[in-house]
Amino acid sequence: MIHNVIKYLEYSAKHRPNHIAICNENMKLTFKELEIEAKKIATRIIEMNRGMTNKPIAVLTDKSPTSVVAFMAIVFSGNYYVPIDISLPMDRILKIVEVLEPSMLISNSKYTKLLDKFQDIPKLISDSQFVSKIDEYKIQSIVKGNIDTNPLYVLFTSGSTGNPKGVVVSHRAVIDYIEWLSETFNFDENTIFGNQAPFYFDNSILDIYLTLKHGSTLVLIPERCFAFPQELISFMYEYKVNTIFWVPSALNVLLRYKLDENQVLPELDKVMFCGEVMPVKVLNYLKRLFPNATYVNMYGPTEITDVCSYYIVDREFEENESLPIGVPCNNTEILVLNEHNQLVEEEEIGELCVRGSSLAHGYYGDWEKTEAVFVQNPLNDKYPEKIYKTGDLVKYNSLGEIIYIGRKDFQIKHLGHRIELGEIEGACISIKGVKECCCVYSHRNKQIRLICSVEDYLSEKEIYKSLMKKIPKYMLPGKIRIVDQLPKTPNGKIHRKRINQEFQSI
Ligand code: AMP
Image (cartoon, rainbow, N blue to C red; front, side):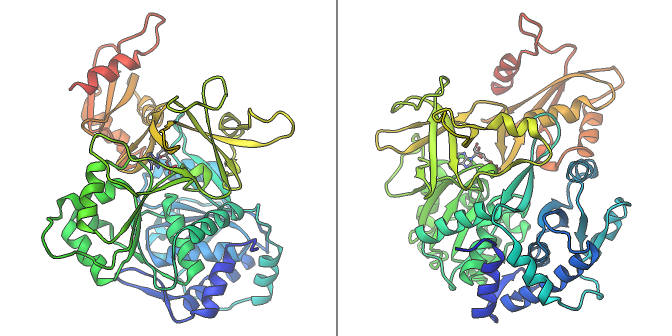
């Protein structure tokens, strides 16, 4: 049994040194090159932080093979990585760095200006020339000393009170996930993953670590392809992609690819998806487009390491039916609990809760939020045992499969991104001149909408401009409406339900 994910890379570098591990349009790295480059940077990290281990190191990253080199370097150095997307507004990057207090920042020479903002944190420019030697002895003693409950990464996700939450995930949780995937599906050195997920999103964990374990190849698909189905298909064809794990919103693009009698991507073997509801309409179209592929609906939040249940599509579905999220993964138990903390009966709706090695440690530096959702298993009063309460409402169908119903809070999925409406409200209320605000989501129009009351001098345009500096692009409202006063409930609270109803019908 392995205790450190780096063993996956070491194995593939030894047995398939010259096989392409990861590539994009501009760059290719073999397993041996990936290992060597990562060890060089690891050596520099060890020198710079005097061998300190188990500390967070932020990687200010875009999506390129060098980001994966940096992640692996951090793992070789005995620390854990925290991907931060360089396209985020500065305000949000600062918030994340403030919570994290990283022991070091890693980036490449393209982003040195951004790094200058952080005066007091040691920085490493990973593509600079001085990184050249490898201290194999130190690296091996660190790898040997690693235990599997050590964090591997922290991924920041939207937080309801305006601050992003950092989910801390261990080596054990990722190994548990990767071993389950390997036992359940047939991946090998001929697998070519077509990556869609950004590295700060948990879906990328499958792509990265299955590639390392099986000596496969990871192809980073350029973001622009996801706007043009023809370009997307051509790219996948050129790079011989045979396995994909995307959010349904990304697959949705393929609805614009015209069906004809010629089979597209005959090599495409697995179409796996996760992160939001997969509309049956999209699935049925894909099945016609790629008739040879196996389709898998995976479900899970970042807090349980990406996936905790799955459904291999084995029958036909009508457009008005829901695709099951299926059954638990190996070594995972799903408890669907009603409001009395009892297991639900068939067709009764309850909250999906998870138990197992895949659970994250909690939220970085936030005990309160951690304790609110990582709680004692209410079915066990004999010894401490945590479950994670997902906030997702589900039920069992007559086949014993889990069916996703919706959320019990104000978290949404918009274009595949997890968003707490409270975070948008938090950003809005912090704008000078905003008195009150409420954010809702129109599922029909797939649009975030913001309603607010403000001082006279503020306009919708100015609110939008201020929001652009505070929250990521994908959180920006599609519509902003200024009103004199927000509707209130009899006890004076913002009448969210009424606002929601009004907005849904527009
Ligand atoms: P994230 O932490 O970004 O992976 O988002 C997790 C949330 O996405 C879950 O709590 C669900 O609300 C939603 N989600 C993930 N997978 C699915 C799925 N297959 N069907 C429906 N919703 C999903």
